[in-house]
Amino acid sequence: MYDFIIIGGGTAGLSSAVYACRANKSTLVIERAAFGGQIVDAPMVENYPGIVSISGAQFASDLFDQAEKAGATFKCEDVLQIVPEEGFTTVVTDCGKYQAKAVIIAAGCEHKRLGVQGEDRLIGSGVSYCALCDGAFFKDRTVAVVGGGNAAFSAATYLAGVASLVYIIHRRDEFRAEPTVVERTKQLNNVRFVTKAKVTELVGDDELTALKLDVNGAPQTLDVNGLFVSIGQQPENDIFAPVALDEGGYIIADEKCRTNIKGIYAAGDCRYKTVRQLTTAASDGAIAVQTALAELF
Ligand SMILES: Cc1cc2nc3c(=O)[nH]c(=O)nc-3n(C[C@H](O)[C@H](O)[C@H](O)COP(=O)(O)OP(=O)(O)OC[C@H]3O[C@@H](n4cnc5c(N)ncnc54)[C@H](O)[C@@H]3O)c2cc1C
Image 1 (tube, rainbow, N blue to C red):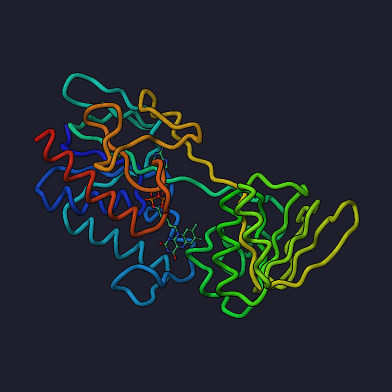
Image 2 (image 1 turned 180 degrees about the vertical axis):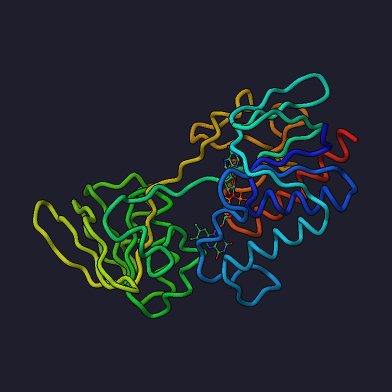
């Protein structure tokens, strides 16, 4: 029986582990892939307060070291199910069962990919899924945003303040984004729309240089330095039932990171929130632990 089991070894999970261990609680972090989470893919992080510039891999490695030094235990296993019981929760993985008084779900979420040639190879070399994270690297350059929802327009508006030219590429000529947001974006003098268009291939050896498009059936090439894919995110939270999810599949948690089940908390990108960043993931980790300490110990 652990005091804390943390599901997911990304920024939210490892931050939770640091706080739980420093409160002298036995803490198990279960991660199914790479400790560090999504940020491992980021070539550079320049918006974490107090750290001027660091690679994503180094950030993740430092945070892992910090949690390990604090005393956390780690297991590389896939969590398949959680079962709330009287006064504790059982966590079932592909290798066994563990129990804890408090469980923090910090399972993150994945950005949907286009699934076209060149995409995987050029992630971090021109291809990004987060304008707020990587937009500043494209100052005075030409970028494209793929998507037609509010998130894509919000990315395009942010990028229009940084880049010299922003294309919004969308497969239809109507947008899911709110009409007022679309109209406001159309007023920006460095934003261009490419509609009825699908990206078919990303071009570039070491860095992205161009996009191949199918525009209304005709092939076209667009020279760009950056591509921001904003076609949605994929949380995989169904396995955490009976924890309640919103219609997008994100865990519903209050500002103290409490879910609908006593003793189960949610932290980081897996929960409903408006800003998904390292700072908010780390903040959730601290809050979830403090809430559990006050409620359960
Ligand atoms: C390329 C890239 C660049 C970015 N750059 C920045 C940046 O510069 N600044 C910034 O603030 N943010 C940046 N972000 C966003 C930032 O990485 C995320 O907001 C942050 O990582 C969220 O942390 P998290 O712990 O909630 O989730 P994650 O980092 O996604 O970690 C969740 C972990 O849970 C594990 N997991 C999921 N399900 C299970 C399961 N069933 N069993 C066991 N383990 C499981 C996953 O394998 C994963 O490792 C970037 C994201 C990407 C992809």
